[in-house]
Length: 493
Image 1 (cartoon, one colour):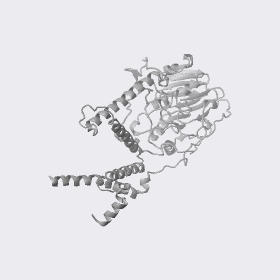
Image 2 (tube, rainbow, N blue to C red; image 1 turned 60 degrees about the vertical axis):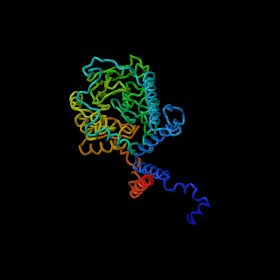
Image 3 (cartoon, rainbow, N blue to C red; image 1 turned 135 degrees about the vertical axis):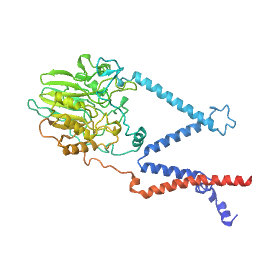
């Protein structure tokens, strides 16, 4: 042993934490390098989901090792102090079974007792109802062969701070504007909630207010923050409520209960939900596709097809009807699409009820994977042309993060494509009101609201190479001593 080694031993330097950490054969340094490199690399590539998965694995690993200290599955163990891999797998399996059982039990309990899910499905005497489910007017898939489920899952695992705004969206405080006889004002409150008002009648579509998430038990995506919040207390008395379908971002139980004195017009099957929530039977009209209702001398409506689906629980998909609405309101022809994919039926609707002074069209939460139930921007413009609409107003946007596109992309693309194809596009600011037939609001209010940031490793590519190298060093730090140990044992033999 050298004099330097003796001196180091006398000073105790070999026993320090860093001394032990750098000692060959100590795997801790290797694991630190691997884990640190992986965590920083994942964060730097907007893959925080991988880090979350890794944390969950670590938690399970800790619980398994903690349970090995008990007498669980110890009967066939030769050395209880050194638990076998088989015993660890048994413990892990038991944990997973317990978690799955708790999930099933809690889900069953919630489905049976939470009124948010609405009523149980029932049968309907309708040409659109076959084999206990409603059908679209043309073949419709909820997925696409162009995008695999694995590709879609991978896309969702990549975080992107532009899918929702990182600051409050510009909005106006709602004010009732003065109207002349026969004029109709329009106010958009985000997503598919539209208030239309004359001097005598006020109607609203798919009203959703409050801060609850867009899902069962308010567990879905939270609404985007607005500079001005809105509630039913801010609005005039609502005479008629029109629902397009029963998805949570269109049929909100709490809002419905607040509107219990209004008259509801809903697709087939949704009446049962409203009855479950305490709405009086006399205040509900249920319609099938192409049913019409004469509500007053100045308001006639028709319920028309859409290309979508329905459902609020685990086993009630397609159990209620979905659709769009046509309004003949003070001799103004208005179309409200609800949620829909592009369909040939637009032309039929136009022939029967068009041309339209304005069409509110589903323009957001799209993806090629579910293109047949939500329109892409170019399809929105074509729908406006098919409907022979003087003006289209993009809806189903600017409230929830439900898709992979940037939150502002639908307004930008629809307005740009509309200009290219001579289709007028209205883009009013949230909460603002305008009169149908007057000047078209075309505020580009979404521009400059929030800046998107790129993954920080895109800005510092050299750091990514450093992380890969340090991770490789960590692997070698663990592996190489094991090879040397194997060689030494072979030589001794």
